[in-house]
Image 1 (spheres, rainbow, N blue to C red):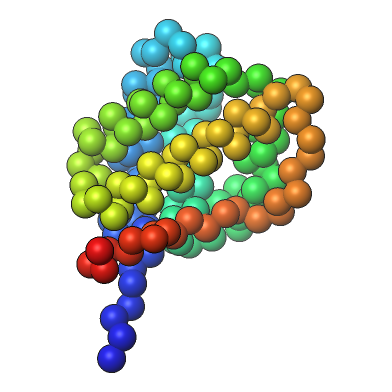
Image 2 (spheres, rainbow, N blue to C red; image 1 turned 30 degrees about the vertical axis):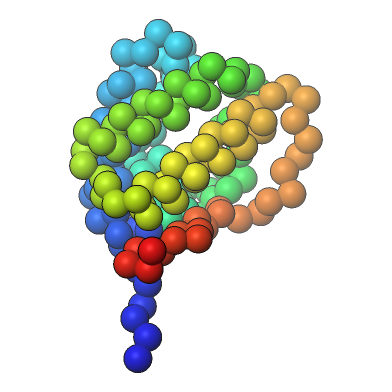
Length: 154
């Protein structure tokens, strides 16, 4: 009898946990001198939209695609912003601080997969934000998994 491996969305605690994460993250962003200018026109529902994005990426409901425009909308929101390497790195740092603050799971398997997505996604966002970025070939929201070490299998 094989045991079903939970999605990262299930493991993290679902939508409410991701909403807490993004609220804490953007609270930090609003006060950060390097990132606040990038987000100066952020709408009040932006943290919720990012939580919805992360939910879909981590194997939860396809709500971002069905209700918020999917991958193409997310891509459009980054185009032309010219995110710099130091801004990307600060984004990653604040996201990981927020993850600790809201007590995301701390097991090595989850954190490894979470950090891998945050690094990969932030680097893709930075690349796609450059004025000369080629059009993306991706059409759908990526779904991120456990990689090499699912929970309880290490």
